[in-house]
Length: 126
Image (cartoon, rainbow, N blue to C red; front, side, top):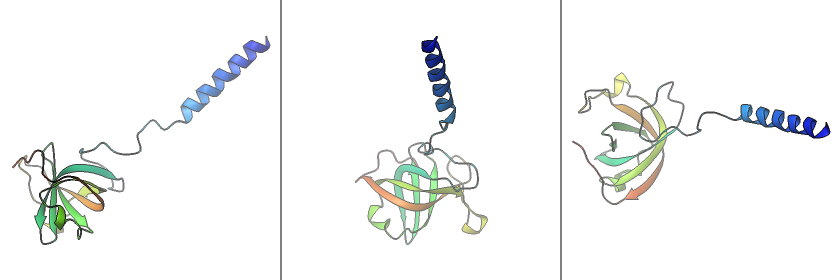
């Protein structure tokens, strides 16, 4: 009888522990567009282009992100494959929203971290 009680208690504790787990991953999927208020972080890998403080990142699916925020360290990575971590959002109307080759509004990404991946871009789709 005592073994049955311990087994039931163990199963109950295991069930409670499983219910307490977070069912959603903490980091958003790489390269996918984000919805919501833009407060979540995303890591997007792609080809860095631009100059004069105006930079874009094009991921492998062809989505282009207008990079905002601290872009001072990006000029040395132009033409390289990089991973940008930051807060995604739709480009604001005041920052001249452009259309991508797919015809959708360009995403904006506020740069927080830059990680160099390669000296050349894998796949530049223009």
